[in-house]
Image (cartoon, rainbow, N blue to C red; front, side, top):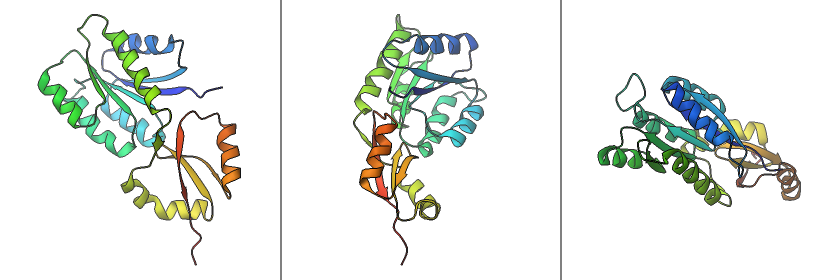
Length: 197
């Protein structure tokens, strides 16, 4: 059994949020677990707490900011690599360039015919591409949490996906067994927490 793909939708229009949620929940290829919020602050609180989302769908105009989506993209850099798609009714070339420079993986105009289908297909294509990538944690985060990791996992191998520890074990064989049991279909980044001498 393959784990569900976690999606965070940040969209201030309730009807729009529900339409996006429905499209992902009805997909037959992936099992999507969807969380949806209306505001930047809510999204950041969730990301700080959980971190482990496979995909963010971000509206461009998020209250109270004119370019709230851009601010969220910039803030999202500290929450580890994940797929970020801007889905907006305010699609301009200038906004698209800003979004891509801030780390968006795609930029889709809601006003285009079939835009919801395009959003879902883009997300699925990018999830398929990530399937066998090694997900190395952000180096700044690793430096900041090095002491905590050494205290918690001293002398063990640690497996990460998107900056979250998914498994740990004292040997390669035991770690491989744990990863296999979890039915992960993404390749974790593995590091060793040395024993201090």
